[in-house]
Length: 274
Length: 333
Image 1: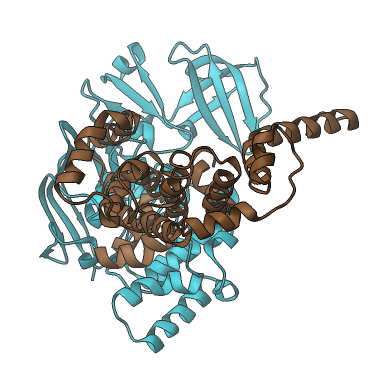
Image 2: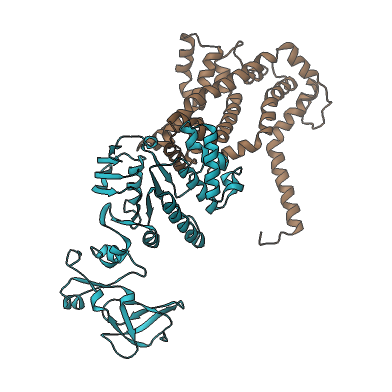
């Protein structure tokens, strides 16, 4: 940097940055704090020092089995992501490497479906699920989550594939590679970082999805988002237990996100800077 | 063998005709350069020969066999791209081995050819590196290595030196020429650089707007350009072209005189002018003469050192035997 940054300015900026970060993180922090309180403390009012009791976690686990919704979350998020990749890879491939006049329009159209409020199609989808017996089934939700996130998956993969220079694929063709060889030996190895970050992001999106999973499940297929919701209404408001359930629901994805930070940032900013 | 014949080959992108039907024969073992300004269709023509683009009309014969609809892999040609197009996730060894692997060649034979190519191209100590760890010149050599191990019937080069710096370009130019002398394989080379064309080619094909303007040896093109376009394009610095009264004196619409065919003198001559910019290279001197009334500037090349400076009044005399005359269509008279 050409300008010398004074020590004071640097300290000031550091404090500001931490303050903003804390502000953003605070709701999650307060959830964790509340989960470590007793119910009496939790309703008593704002207090940052809990009594560090694990009572709420024990109640949550004993009253409502945590592992069932946890497994549902894993199955739904991983399942819908893999399914989305199977559909999206060939789609993105075709659009990136043999685009037509309409390719851009199709991409925009796909993205535009994400702009529609989900409530707008709640009734028809609810009825379809009810009539076809898909209500509260893992398979039904897996397909639905796949379809919801498909536009983003296709878009991300398309951006990735676009970064692969066409000349390299042409070189492979000149070198005698068949379409299968070209995909297997040249394209896929080059696209793996892109596929991986798309996979990670989509797992997170599917894991966090709460609207459809709450509407279309009751018990059998309910994932963690529905698990949290179940603490808010039927038993009245038990803040500590609700917080404990929330922490247990977000913990796995927080850990996954933490370990794949690099991959995710690269995935989301890919193509933005060269 | 590597004789390539184009019969009425044409290419359209939608409504736009980039290459009107053209005929061309490239003999076995020839070094042919396609040259022309950017957008003239030279790369498209190369890609049609390679099979990376489909022709809109006409036939392509390779060694007498119709290859018009054959896939790139089936044509037995190797291509070197401007961007090198190496496989970034493979080592140099694997890059060079790739076409042989695709052809199902036995491993010992692959290794033998890789060693030979690496030795010829000075790549032996880089075989286990990735392309990202190599310099531009080394990458270009890997791309050439990948092409030669296949022992193709012809090499196609698409502006292979444009991404290299000037010094490296001269070196690689010599290497490619030496490669051609050694292998005696047909080579088709696309460039917009007429110096590359003049120095490397057995035969130059000058293209403009997808049309072939002239086909000939470098010196044919230099001494007898078929039209004004070729006259202006081939030669460095470019030929002086004059129209108007001075051309009419010679019974032509346009006349052309190369800078090296004009004598410059401080005392006597045919056309009077004033020295504008002058460049002194030691071996040669270039003068850009203004105020002659013939053209905005007249370029003159003079051997050795000439003691003329900016603003000096000078006299120019063309070598009458070396004046090129063109008619109203721009064709040579």
